[in-house]
Image (cartoon, rainbow, N blue to C red; front, side):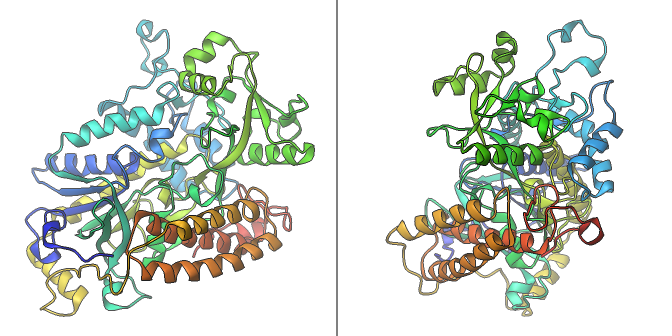
Length: 574
């Protein structure tokens, strides 16, 4: 925790040194953060104005969950599909907890947002006969995934996320209004409430403290609007498809700042991650099952027909629980995903990345069944926002997986995540832009004076390290990290119980105290920041799970195995 030094001023403009251009701070560089940054600049330019955007990336600009998204983005595109069908599929998957108004607007705005991605250079895979077709609705090769009635998944082979990231980053690099800070980790949000020690009333968000992970300096980044696009919290579990950066940072920071957080008990486990000692997080896309691949247990049975009428194309929560049940019933380590009965050439052509990756591990998916297990994949809850991505803290927005919009309810429909990110990025910019462009020097001055209650307080305070000392050994951080993730996997996983949740709660409470003391006694590192956020998110998930005395969607507890619409058709809000 090193206080800001003079050479950092190029990166962090203090509140009193406001120029004529409003400032936006975006934390996160996946599809949500990148598309929000681009839209702020484009829409300001369209009105003859400029907005300064600072985009903070924990590692390099391309790293995060988006780049690893294989399946694609769900949107009504074919004439054989309809908004009504997509809405119905989303509501069914969400198990009665979706906000219908949000589902409606997200589905109906989807095609326009997908078209914008294409305008920014994203190249989705076209059908083989695309050049011969006259109807644009038939131009693209659309996948079908679990829970969908129709083919509506636009994709770029099986590397959709990477195709999106590359295209959006190319746009970002052409915009001088955007400053990119790579290898920077957000520490905490700065709010009026924190500055005035009014913890029950957060007031307006004024920016964030951010660690330069390479130099160890802490920057004070002031902003007129702050956008969280930090992704989910998958690394809170021992087994996950998520990259190492996904540690619940935005959720934890918002909760500490006083924002409302909702539905964190609904952690989605993807049914099919590759089971191999050297393939820790490789996802086998649901689109394979959409093309006809079947799940079989180690006895060779097509077991999914016993669990759901849609068989291997059932919603993810049902498939994940079924696989978990079969593994436990047979004492197996995995189940099989079998596509040997499908045309080999088609499999190699449609899923080149999956084919080549599995082949590296000695599995030819056209001849061998694929060993798969469930793994934590997606955070359906998050920072609660309204239809314009506004959180409960003024000046703070949240887009993408970090947010709880109400679209997913108790279980996300496959490929609705990228859709949600672009729809709510658009709505956040549309909502924030008029206020940003109306800002003037007097308004900024009043905000600073209000936050400090002193005319002499002319800037946000620099980070104070106090008496903190350098971390000498990483063993304590690594040990706590492993214990939290193992604890969550064993006691707060696919199947839960009151006993397991209570045991997790007690241990996490102790760990949180230990980590809190360690955090404030040592200078900051990225690992230490992530550990603090990880234990905070673990606590929130456990608290939320304890509060929901029913089984619904992704939350299944053996003590309350039935859905209880009378008492729990509502969000779990902390």
